Length: 152
Picture 1 (cartoon, helix red, strand yellow):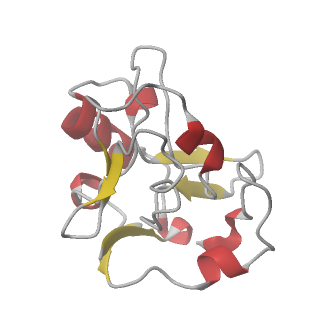
Picture 2: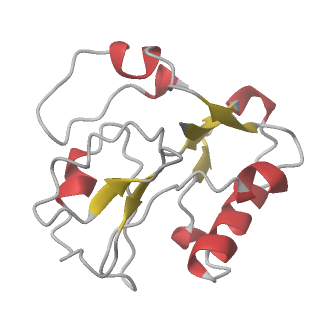
């Protein structure tokens, strides 16, 4: 399975990854349409939030609009989605995105545009299962609970 593995310690916070993602997946220069979100806290700590392709959103979708491709990417079929946002609420990493201009939520599809655009090498297109520590860092909660961001 392909997924984008972040290395926030390498990030220079230029947000080139967000621009590349918004352009490739949404045909827009609006950074709020990026499936990858890079933020910087007051202390300078960088957080990179991107879907790990775990697939927990697949079973929660009431209209089966979310599926896994042969390459392992989890995708939202916009023509089937009814915009209930159950997947957004349920995503354990907070990586399912919404925007006022879009009915259907959107997320990383591991296309690699962000990886190619990052000048610092803070992103990697990895193969295989995501690291188990993603979901083991805290106890699983109720649907919609998010996990600690220390999984990166």
